[in-house]
Length: 238
Image (cartoon, rainbow, N blue to C red; front, side):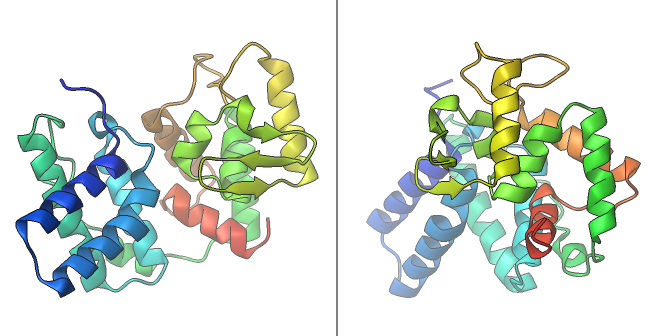
């Protein structure tokens, strides 16, 4: 397998190749908008070899939750599928996770309203799994899942109480800063902020997805994506 390449990085390379092969201005504008504004921000830190059906499905559901039409999500799906197909042909990807994926964004548009009490129960459940710090930070700070999994202590500006990420910074509340300080006290030798309580290793996307779904079931919430639950928490100023 060639050197590891991120999905977002490959998407930009693929777009450049398509432009060199020639395309209409309308097509180029549509591809560029989808890739630069949607696909790259979502998958910039996800290696091609680790991209899963669950991650892609959550992406589609989050687009629907934001209000994109059925046709718009379908267009995005076709672009993502095309660029991943070519990654497979070039030996960068063994299985295209979009090839057999059934879009469920219509259900996401009809999603039940999640109430504050339900989110509270969700947080109580993830605390039992030892995943409260990472999932609370994702829900309340605006951290993306990939950012949270790979977050390193070097990004935590203690004096300014903010996270300095590669393309942006996040101002933290006192509670969020306290949670990070407690995590550092628990694992002072780790360069990565959040460690899985079960393995004492950094979380994987599969593990976080499993814990999220389990917490939803235990808390009797609809089976919605972590991104959607994050949007609900934001609306409530949780």
